[in-house]
Image (cartoon, rainbow, N blue to C red):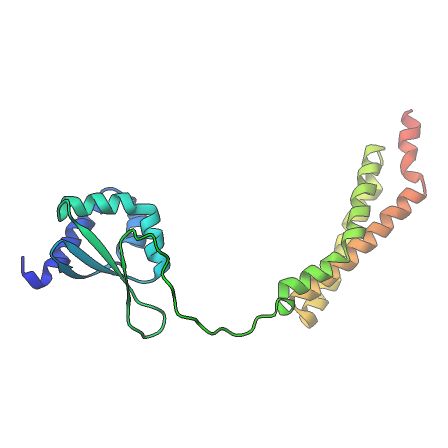
Amino acid sequence: MQNQDRHIDIWNDCLRIISQIIEPQKFETWFKPIRPVSMLESTLTVEVPTDFFREYLEGAYLDVIKKTLKRVIGADARLVYLVHPVKAEQPMRYPASQGLTPVNRTVSVSTYNPANNPGARVLRIEAFAEAGYAASIVAYGSCVGAGDTAVPSMLNLGSMWLVRIVPAIFLTRIYGLPGYWIAMCIELNVRGLLFIGRIHGNKWMKNMIQTT
């Protein structure tokens, strides 16, 4: 074993042992990307892609790593991680299983406004559908409970196809994702009004009265 390649041979020995302990897919994901850097006495330095990678590795496989290093290097074995930041800067070094949280440099990010998020716009649209949706659910349950099932089913199906899907095809071409939610909001309110009209007309109670 040549001295300059000692760290490579040591890590390869560790990998052979670890590959027999953990699942192959996890081994490929969490141990194959690790690159041995140097070996000084009983301290092995390895390079990992990110600090998150290091934290997960120690959280999930710390016991396996410790036992393997002691088996290959000896009882006084130590492991040091070399983590390269995103930018081309000096790598950060972390002793294995250290408890202190590393202090990263401040990174400038673009200003983020939640109001401009498409999901936030969709939620604002969807809020206007809740009243009609709630009314349709309660009214539909009342009708079905009274034995009135045919008309409520047609109201649901007709409202879905005629008031939601057809307009959604056109609105999504104009407004994108919010266009679909606008169509759905309109349909749920129309459905709610239809069911309120059904309840108000008392026709839904005929089957219940006949049964009684």
